Image (cartoon, rainbow, N blue to C red; front, side, top):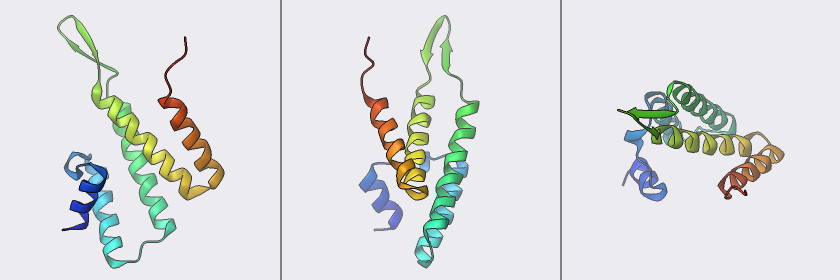
Length: 116
């Protein structure tokens, strides 16, 4: 079983569904991992690069989708925001413990129901 298959199975993600920049970054990172020459600095650079790719895609994605007279939330934008939040959390862990704790707190707070 390949590393990609193991990651897909373990985390329930599909590499094919990543955008072009994320795929390129993933495969560059995979090549480095296979060489066993990845260090914390390179990993941080890859995470930042993937985060920027998601940010660019999110900026271009409309907030709502209109079908005739109906207006629906854009599910792709919701998923992009979730991926961006994961990348921000990973970046936080690689940059500093304080930033990681803040990112984790923000993520958990975002999962809590809104109080009226």
